[in-house]
Image (cartoon, rainbow, N blue to C red; front, side, top):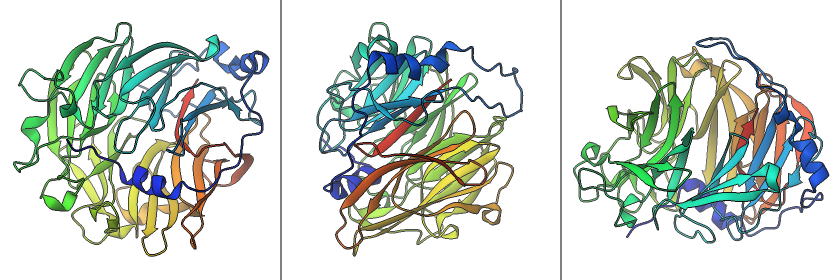
Length: 432
């Protein structure tokens, strides 16, 4: 059985032997918690239906999941009411690889289960911050299934699985592993299993590696990586896929073959008319990374949501680095452009941005130059850019302090707020 580790995790894991600065505030107390969560007592900003306007909200709670992969993860939080302080929630026994979503006044922790992962794995944990961060429910996605992303709609969750074949009970109607499962969050029951097997390249290793997902109105878009055995995009001539599901029934509606390999990022413009896909660094093996050497593997694809067969592809050699995370906000597209030097294990990352209406690399500008090893970034409801990174010492490859900075989302100027969590933040979620 083959389990996969993302490039992000591999490089993080082997550089995570350094120390990180301790969070001075420690676990949050009840009085602090009431203050932090106070923005959720206000009514949500009223966004006009089908409006193309960008609506900002200056009241929100921010949750951050941090991990050094060698120990349990940690859940941090702050809000617009307590922006000068980052609190540690003190939630025990979190897994050491996860992503988080915040919705319905709850935090959903999706524990992944790739290689080298320990602690809680292959499940979704539902946490109630207002109830002393008690776990409301915790449901398995199937032993070894390595869940990658989650979309929550009412009491149901669509969950993409990186290794669906690991659970012998995870069988879709076509007799193949369910690459996306639909889970009832009240009971943990799997109500539907959706297979992408028929889309895959006809080689000796047919595995979808379903990854990022995106909800647009009544449709869910799923990235299918279709990687080669050993996490090797060079092993086969297989491009990624973008699959569309009905958000109510889970029915497969459409699928297209993408222009690049190893799709890792997915975003949509504020008017929902344009979809963006980033393709990560292709590599020969876990430690030999071939950055931006050819036009056909990595890069950015810009697709029309109305007709995804119409698209523009910008190869990663136009950016001078390999692409990682992408996000939209402020009418802009944001992309992490990264570089890795295997000879001295050094990392650098920049954030480039462009107007959502642009379709060529000349429209980009470098919003955040000279950043070190960006772990993740997110656009807050007020339009600011939250960037998590850590310093990598080039001489030793050892990781330095973990940092989260808040920048102006349009100019990139520093707002004056910096956090130093006790573990590098790899997932950020906001709730208004």
